[in-house]
Image (cartoon, rainbow, N blue to C red; front, side, top):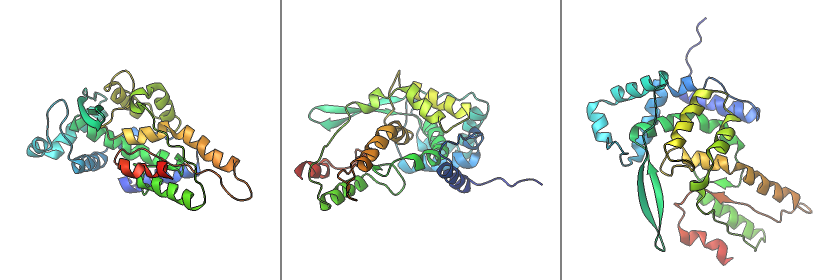
Length: 266
């Protein structure tokens, strides 16, 4: 009997269910699904939806679609399956943050963003269940504003003292070896890890490339251990059925600063 090929949506659902049921399970044969045309087509759709700027090669969506998307994706698939794929250097771009400071973006080429979205489609279901309730931003049904709502709920319950913490140069200081070890805790397939390693190296000696489709997932994964400790603090300090601590973290700069300041005004 020939087992029918599973579609991407069902595969992602099964990965999530398995990861939820067995927290120490390491998934294997992931790379073959990354290389599937269905995965690459969905990855291109996600990349196209964001309609971002071209990378260092200058190739635009218009140029790709003029030459044929199927032909473009077939070339990417060949490079992945033959293990000849290497990401290009990221195009650097600075955007102002205010107070005379700027945030450096590392913009991958469209080709590399497609590959990164393909990898993300397979990796995200493995780690989503491991993330903590207080972590918001770039998660399904957990936008960054959910963190503000959680703070508001804490205020209603009588919590009045707020500690507002911002991580300085977080994305510039992430260590590749630590991040890869966290990925390997769930992925027992050297090929996708090899591609991720090349993606990280394309950004420089260390740090996560802001502007990459993978950085939101990786940033949440990297901070998951501190999140666990802070969630544990809620249980440890609980007394007479009442929690004295509330914790919320978001990884999304799109939350307006005026809204962030509500915590300082309490």
